[in-house]
Amino acid sequence: MTLTELRYIVTLAQEQHFGRAADRCHVSQPTLSIAVKKLEEELNVSIFERSKTRVSPTPLGDTIIQQAQKVLEEAAAIKDIASSGKNQLTSPFHIGAIFTIGPYLFPRLIPELQRLAPDMPLYVEESYTATLRRRIRHGDLDAIVIALPFTEADVVTQPLYQEPFVVLMGKGHPLADETKIHPEQLNQCNVLLLGEGHCFRDQVLEACPNLKPSLDDPRGNIRTAAEGSSLETLKYMVASGLGVTILPQSAAMVGHYSASELLIKPFADPVPSRTVALAWRASFPRLQAIDVIRDSIKACKVAESFKP
Image 1: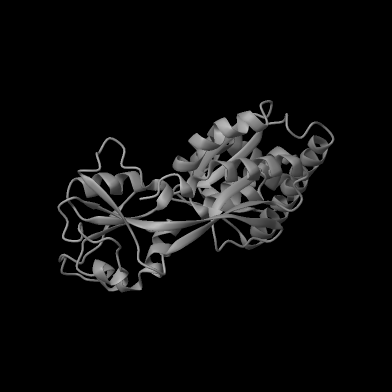
Image 2: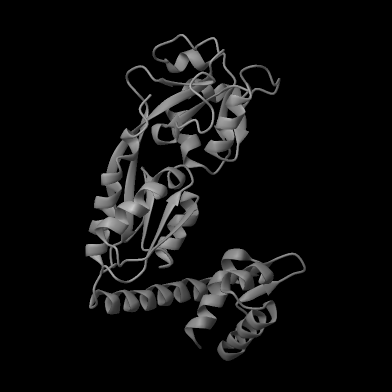
């Protein structure tokens, strides 16, 4: 039994497909399949139930996989402990952020970090909160930047900054002359939202509960909310005259569209907002690196950079 075999069965349980699991582990499908079968023979149990369409853990296999995950986490902790005895600002640092933060934070964070810790390579990635949660637990990432609320056992979460929401609309929109927008004024607008799985979508609907009925409206009228895959997609849709959208303030840059084409409007008080936070494993020993990452993010002043 090896750590590699344990990593294979954990990944296979997550993907429920030999091909996808092999891709994630950067091995061929036969290599992964043989290793899993070898471990099952060594333990004399069936860890997985195989069918033509999917692979799923057996009840006993599920228990084995949970224990394997714990072993992998402890093995990752050994590497962390070893790293802590070295210069904490020279080893690579892997950080992830949700899709609605990463594109607007990372371009500012990287040069700021190069100034504060020039010898620490930074690797960045963007994903959904659920994926980042799993990757921080598994030791694939050293820290993640997410929006609160966020809770995870044995993970430290520290708020970084509060970011207000704004409304993006075309210059010819009926609300274009308004100084500030009240959520109720959006009731008769075609509000463009992110798709399911984005936490920012949930935060918008919580801040503007008056929009929820339009999501279930089967008539497809003016109040029906459209869904986009990214904030940048929504901005292009607004520029095309398809409606308005709600953005975190850091995403309010309109790119190559001029201020005469797109307008950024603040909300009236109380202004809806989100709390952006940094999270890392409680066992992560490179606290000096965490401090530098936190200080670098705060120095970026992302939420203050694009005030309407």
